[in-house]
Amino acid sequence: MAEQIKELAARLRTNGFRWEFSNSEIQLLCRLWSTLASGNRITERRLTRLAVQLDVSRDFVNSFVNRTGERDRQGKIVGIMGLSRIRHSHRFRVQGRDLWTWCALDALFLPAALNEKVEIESTCPATGSRMQIRVGPQGIESTNSCDGALTIPHQKCDIDSGNSGEQLRSRFCCLVKFFASREAALDWTCSHECEFSVISIEAGFRLGEVMLSGLLNCGVKSGLRSCCQDFDSG
Image (cartoon, rainbow, N blue to C red; front, top):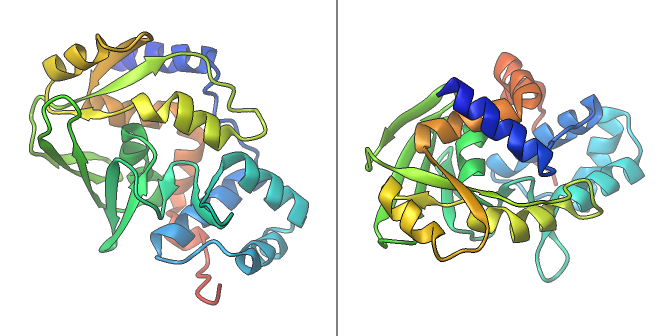
């Protein structure tokens, strides 16, 4: 499986999914994820405090959030790089709180980035059956579908553009889904024009590790809870 994952990760990078961040961006992203996972909002005041604590300019913070974030209709920041306060297809329960992820792959790599055990709930778009998956920092702990799978589309996406978050959601995340079985996933992909890889849920976790290896190494070694401060007074 390791070689398959490496080849798939290389192909995704060729298509524009590189996820390369500077050290300051990694620290900022980690703290923003931690803020959401702790049940707090990403407010303008919180962003100003983060800029001071990380010794970066507010323009730097604004640029990163605009590039990787998600906003609601009122312009408020509700998500960052895969993790969101508003409803998407994949429920992500962490510390007893319900959040959502932009795609199935996000739901699988974020437990390691957050150093948390989570419960994922999703619906197979082919069969309508409910998917339940428990994931920890080290891998998949349990699933109610032993033959579960997820889809990975192969199409170009410029995540270095001015709004990579929007690019990811509209061109990639909307096609990265959990399925009750490999057969159900293969049937579903036949109704779409782009090419797909269909992989197991375990392989999806490993793919996330490879794609975000530098970021995950930061999170797993120190734990985001220890390197991020609490920002309760947003």
